[in-house]
Length: 342
Image 1 (cartoon, helix red, strand yellow):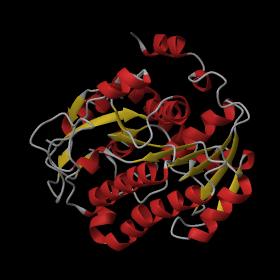
Image 2: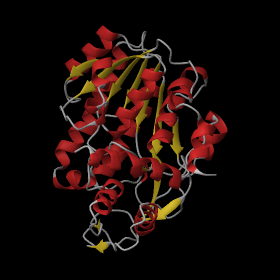
Image 3: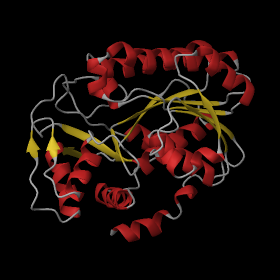
Image 4: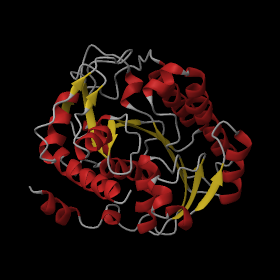
């Protein structure tokens, strides 16, 4: 299937979930990040009433550059501030809470674990506690965990039955957030579900240390892309629109199925090495003359990680709608426009 045909099949991005979110009150943390921006855009198309928690003003973020911030309620605060989080839940009374806010960079977590633990662990229990205090209004809570929560496993792919064996700071922070979510769901009967995805990619990611935006930027400016690892690390890569669809599927199904405290993997179940992904990007951009620079500097990272999403398919009816190549084509197009307008 060609990329253009894929778009026809999928239709308008905002139509994935029908009208379920029409006039629903939704609270999103981490709204100005990669996934958050696309999630806000989709929910605006669905006519949801959105309140966003935003810590920093990043003018080049899609959330601000495309004017999404002007169409939602914005609360400027940090996840570490329980009072502010509780105030949002109390005053805006969201029916749906989607918790994306986190420190997401592995290198930053290795350099400064306390900041990552405060954001990702304390921030999560603050959000859950605020929801517990106002459980009469909150009907659905989606917590964004990660495949990193599983840590290193002898058996792959990860399934939801795989134990959480994280050891590195970032990975541990996601394991803890994951377990906190399950604890609040089962102890207080809160309507919580947990998403575990692989590596996200899509237009709007301005962290050019990541492999997809970094490679696209290098290729656009006719530079050899840099790979900080040995290039052999195996990962899942999930397109941002598939990820948004996963979060919204959980937000809806949490209210209609008995899945409180359940975790779900979301994946296209295609694994690529960093070198293979880089090669795909260079091929699509017709930059075969460029050769990756292998720095082999990555430390404290797991060599092989990939997910099974059989549970999500069976229980939620969710499956990936985007081929890697089609998602990369759209992503590359976004960055070409971005660089042209700089």
